[in-house]
Figure 1 (cartoon, rainbow, N blue to C red):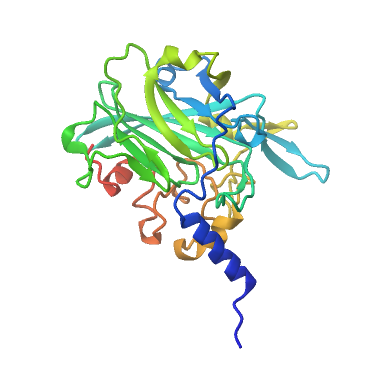
Figure 2: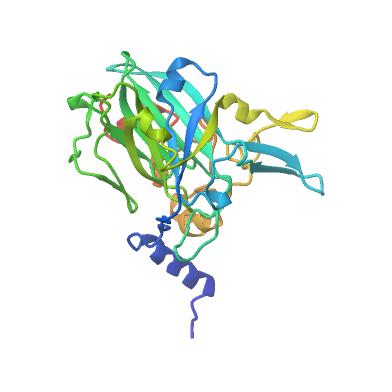
Length: 327
């Protein structure tokens, strides 16, 4: 008599948990004061003006805190990358691009967390170390935000939201104006910058897997209420620094720069995603966080192997076309 292997049963059970409504979402502790990470530092005015603040829940747990990549050597002399949560940082880059409709600028912001812990209930398919989030603010030639995109640095859970500045004919054909549901998280259908003298983008982060659970536009003054938040400054740093982390007398990169892991974040392998998603995505490193802009390692936002390059966030005009945006 044939017996189904235990590993297959476990994988099927985990897949069921992952697909069952919101069973994979961790609970926000209502009595705990969330942390408000506010970007600060000497940066170009455009970068500072549109830099998002991050509202992080369950901040008492170390793995829920934004960190800064640091490199060291373990007792065996092997390189180790970890996130130093005592010095949080938001990394930025400015990427201009052009479509048939005009010229645009992407302001790309990146943060990293120490880990997503292993958990079966709720089931964290993204369990692993050094995971991160990307937030992309797309500006038109008048420096008005016309699109806000949020996703994991693995390319997962991508969501692009229009704003009050988005042209009516640039929306995808199937846009219904309803809240956007991304694997259990509900995001607003549109972000409204209108009528605010000093608006700020707020990214609300769910604890555990560090999913984006909300995006809001608020007056900047509302993000500094000590009665509601634990305020934490996060230094704005150029993204080029991620490839020059001090190590001994020299430097190293947050990313593997060669070999089979080229273009991936060091230490960020996610075994559950390999087991459950690797077979049909045809990528045994699926879910592993990535560098932005490696031509050999596309930051794909669709698990369909044939759309790996068509959905590549780092080729933003192609990304827009793939997801139906007419900018």
